[in-house]
Image (cartoon, helix red, strand yellow):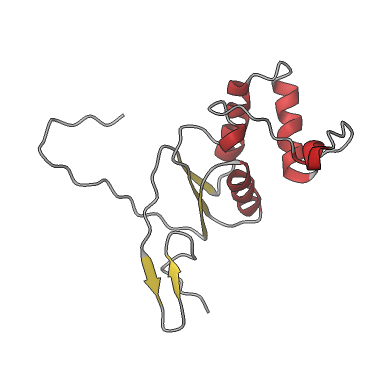
Length: 151
């Protein structure tokens, strides 16, 4: 935690990071995107404005990842997601048989922290700025590394 003396004004703390992909939002989709990209070798910065990952599936909201099991109201108990969602759900089932939402938070957090190619920024607001080339303009925070312009 950072502690500072009282002041009438403070400069906004800025940190410049570089990577191949910036993902704004650490909900289920953002977290899975970051994990997949990092495993493929991309350097990922994952920005989440909350203290936990998972979005609606986190302990803050407490809606479980359902995917295929709740598709179109079918509630098919045999339907299931594959891939990374299945990996996360199996890890959670093994470590969290009681279904405690706080433990699910730690499962997602540890998945992100275990990937060496992910820089995780929790409780962090993302600000947008324009990055322009002669051919197109991209939001810098959602585009490629500004030190390497697109081809």
